Length: 306
Image (tube, rainbow, N blue to C red; front, side, top):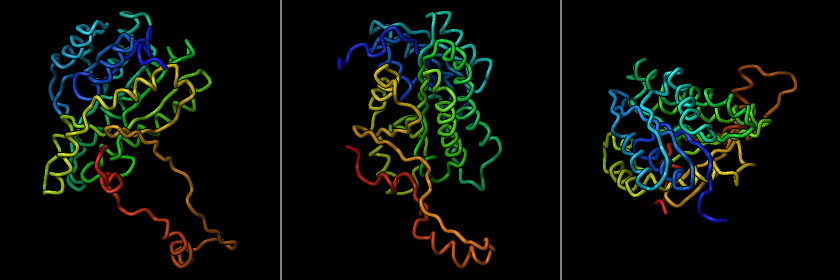
């Protein structure tokens, strides 16, 4: 298949597209023929402040490359603003075909020290933000009986990580959101998939380094550039992926993984009914060989990226 113009004629909204993964996704979508609404609030890693420069930098890069793009500086955590993003796409380009939910912040802290503010801020941007933007686009997708959602999840949610209860919960919640959208909207030819990106970004750069092991891991992460994620997003957004929905992918440098989804591993049965004692004596020992250890993402992806 030709590498040129895989999404020609389509209109995309990419959130958090001022820097990092979002910027690379927006630029590659434009290179493949999409007209792009580049959304970015321009806040700090923790979600504070606002700056129009990041979104405008991506818009300028797209226009300099011969593409079409418009900037949006609103917060995905605001449902009215999210609806405005879709309205802007319709006003500027006449349609909306692709939504990439990429906007995010980090407020990492060990769980017993995490505040309600830390929790709410991360959930609002990642999970509520993904809902807000997806909900705003859903009616249009239904009417035109076509559309592609791509949501950014994380192995911090799929597998686990230290000090990220808010982020992990939000990212795993996005998986449930994506699967529900895929189920509810498949009758309208609307697709919804997730990507867990491994890439160096300012969010990853904000993670504290406590020891030499973490320092070595960060150095490996720096080699995984954001542009490696964008091709999978463009492919999923194209008509060539019309039959792909409800899936979870991970992208790490030149590796693409299809991630598992929750299914039963093993079962036990007690004909007379269970008591707490029988669960302890029989069920737990029988199931224990299939218990999951307290793995973190780095324990599962333990080899160097290729």
